Image (cartoon, rainbow, N blue to C red; front, top):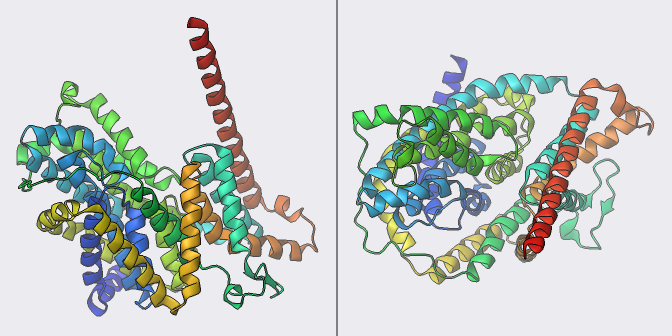
Length: 503
C-alpha cells in the first residue's frame, strides 16, 4: 500500500503524467524514423532533462523507450523498413499483410500486443527489482569492484562482433572515465592544462555523440529510405476471436522478453526473433508464417515491449544496463544524483514507485496515443531525409549548449560523434564503451578503497566470497566468448578450404 501511495503522489503532484504521455508520443515518432533507434531517440532528450525534477525526467526517458519500441513497427509494416532493430522480425509478415490490404489489421495487432507486452514487462519489473536489490546489500567495496568487472565482461562478450573488440571498447570507456580529478587524492589527471576537463568528460556528451551524431553521419552516406506515399491506412483493432488466437504467441513473446530483458547484452532484437521462431514452432498454422501471419506480428511485438520493462531490472537493482537504451536511462539517473541499487530503494522509495506509476501511465496511454499518432508518423517518414537530419542536428546542438552554454561541450560531442563513426566502420560495439565510462568511477573507487583496507594487498579480492564468485563468473563469460569466437573462426577457415577444394 505504501508503494501505491508514493506512486499516486508522484502522479498527482508532479508533471509525471504529462511526461509519460509526451515521452510515448516522442518515442513513437522517433521509432518510426528508420535508423533512429530507441537509444538515439532517448539521447536526443537527455540534455533537456537537466532542469527537470528527477521523477519527471526519468519517466520521460523511460516512456520514450516504451513508445519507440512500438513506433518501429509502423514503417516495418507499411514500407518494410524497420524503424528499430527489434521491428525487423515484425517486418517479415507485417509487410505481407500490408500488400494483402490488411495493413490496418497488422498495425492493430502490433499495437495491442505492444500494450500487453509493456504491461507484463512492468509487472515483472515491479515484482523482481526490489528483491534483487536486497541482494546487493551484501556487497562490500571488493564486491562492487567485481560487479563492475562482471558487467563489463558480460556486455563485451555478448555484444555483436568479436570479444576483443568488445573488451577494447570497454577499456576505452574506462580510459575516458579517468580524465579529470582523481577520486582518492584529488589530483588532476589527463587534463593537459584545460580547466574544462577538471570535472571529467560528462558521459552525456559521449552518449549523445556516439549514439546520435555518429548515426547521423552514417545516415548521411545512405540513400533515401522508402516513402510511405499517400498511405491512408487506419489501425484496425483485432476482434475477440483474433485476440483468442493471439494468446499463445503473446504468452511466448512475453516469456522470452522476460528472460532476455533480464539478461545484460541481449535486448529486444534477440527477443523478437526468438519469439518469432518459437511462435512458428508452436503455432497451429506454421505454414502462414512469412506469408502474412497475425501470430508472427503478435509474438515479436509482445517480446520487445516486454523487454522495455524487464531491461530495467538489472539496471535499477545493480546499476548494470543491459542495452543501449537502459544505458541512456542510467545516465539520466546519475545526472540527477540517483545511484541505482539497494540504497535507491531505501533513500528514494518515492522515486522508484513514482517511476513505476509513470510507466503504468505510459503503457496504458500507448493504446490511445498509438491510434492517434499514426498519421503524423507517416507524414514524418515522408519528409525529405536531409531536412529531418538537419533538424535532428539542430536539436542535438541546442540541447547540449543549453546545459552549460559551453562551446567546449559542442566540440566534445562532435569529437565523440567522429569517434563513434569510426567505431561503426570497424564494427566496435557502443555499449561496452558507454558502460566503461559510466561504471568507471565505481570500478576505480572501489578497487582503490579495497587496497586501502589491506595496505595494497590484492588478497582482499580473494577473501570476499561475493567478489570471488563475481570475478569467476566474469572469467567464465570471457573464456566462453573467446572459445565461441575461435570455433567460429575455424569454421570460416574450413569452409573456405572446402570451397577452394571443390573449385
